[in-house]
Image (cartoon, rainbow, N blue to C red; front, side, top):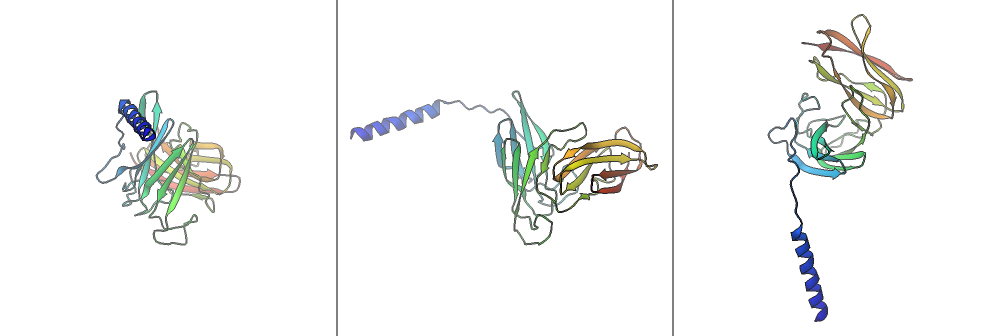
Length: 244
């Protein structure tokens, strides 16, 4: 009887302690490009100064274009002092309709993982199996003045590639997507019609993985430009159009 009484008193004290705690709302977070039925907030995770929020019904890429129904996305928020702000929107490098990227999310330290249960392909983009599902690992990296994407997929691609910039045509910002099957020094530059370099987007050593680099052409006039990717083992050039 005494043991039961002591247990009851302990439970009462614990409940009293929990009730005595004050929880204050710090911020209400919403997506910078919020839209109806995005399901932003369906999945959330927080670690230290970073939080990640999934929106698995979201349709647009990081530039707000290339609409793919229910491709999904996730948003990284960062704390500075007592304030929280959206740092980045992330999407899958191989995003597609009905992937539901962002259905599940988790973040810890410099790494985040995002689930996409409707994704169909393997890591090479082949062997399609309906709703096989995928998960994408992202790692924090230091941003340069032009590299706005701080989280890059650590999924190792099977070969080098330089994707078509998006949006294209663009005004004034666009995003370049590259895939690196091995680590090395990477240089990505913008050229004019004469082949003259007008901007350096990135020039540094990068680990194997896929990367998105945003670039702003606010100081350039409308016209046809080229962007060139060079590594120790690969080189490629693509054309893009700036319309102001």
